[in-house]
Image 1 (tube, rainbow, N blue to C red):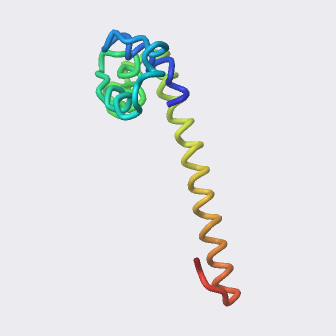
Image 2: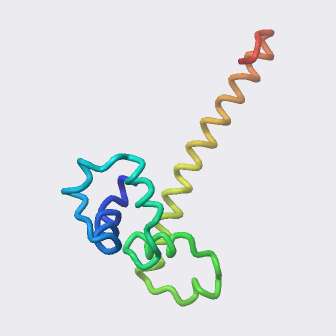
Length: 107
């Protein structure tokens, strides 16, 4: 969300006519979440999200270089995050296996 905050700001302006710099300090978290999840596909964030999520090869074939860059950067960032999660899970299971092998209790 932090990386996309500029898109969120412009999307709130586009869809709701709200300037978040003025409204956010008085907005409750639940209200912000509801409005964020209600952003439509014709907002800056909505367009970027649709590029990131596209998997149809026929549509991808017609992506321009900027759309390809956006999608590639997103997939690379997700892969790195996923790799870190996988590594942490693997290390935890190795720790538990070593504890078990040493006759200790798993926790």
